[in-house]
Structure formats: structure tokens, C-alpha cells
Image 1 (tube, protein in one colour):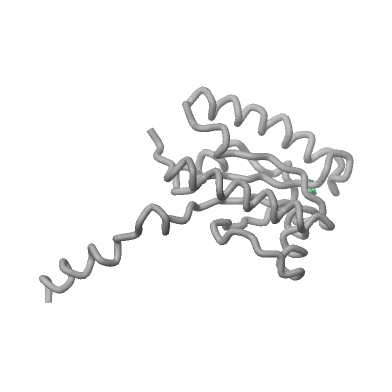
Image 2 (spheres, helix red, strand yellow):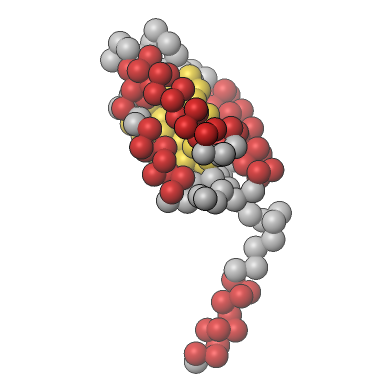
Length: 151
Ligand code: FES
């Protein structure tokens, strides 16, 4: 029995580079980007299955530590999506997000983490096609970069 388990394990783990799918973790604000993702889904716009969505009340609630934790726990890339500037349902949450994410970008660069592994995008509820394009483009970039390894 033990020999069977040992013999079966490698076959299950033999994913080729072409089959490897990155994990793109996305923090999406409830009011705009999450609704944009919903629109893309409801409109049957195909987008890469690498995305894993965490809905947040506002992009202003995304803390830099949440980005670090995402990478630490296996994400290959992180996307933060919020309402366009001036459209935040909490008035200035996305401005706060913009400032924090600039800090995140600088910290990631200082740590030697590829710039394309992190992205901040403003996507409204009516921009399902933008959501689709961002997810597909970022997933493709992550495939080119390969798996993320925390050093
Ligand atoms: S509610 Fe969407 S960014 Fe603040």
C-alpha cells in the first residue's frame, strides 16, 4: 500500500510548465471592481482562471501587509482593484489606497520582486471588459515570470 502511494505521487505532480497556472490574488472593492468582475462573468466574457478574488468594502481597506501576506501564502501576483478616483463610495478611500500602493510598489522593488507581479487598477462596475483585459494580461505576464518564490 505504501509503495502504491509513493508510486502514484509523482504522476500527480507532473505538471509541465505549459500546464502551470499562476495564482493571481485580487482584492476588489465591493462597489466597483467586484461589480465589474460580476459584469464580466454575467456577460460571459472569458478571463483567465488564475484569479482568486477577495471582496473588500473599499480599496482603501487594503493594507500593505495584505499584499505581503498574499505573496507569503503562495500568490504569484496580486491585483488591487477599486473605484475610479473621485468615485469611491467612501469618498477618499481610493486616494488612500493609491498612496499605500505606491509604497507597496517601492517596497516590492526594493525586495527585488518583479514589478509585473503587482498591479493597482481602477475598474468601474460597467467596465467588465477592462476587468477581463487586466486579468488576462496580468495572468499572461505571470506565466512568463513563472512561480513566485519568497527569498
Ligand atoms: S468604494 Fe471602491 S474604492 Fe472605495
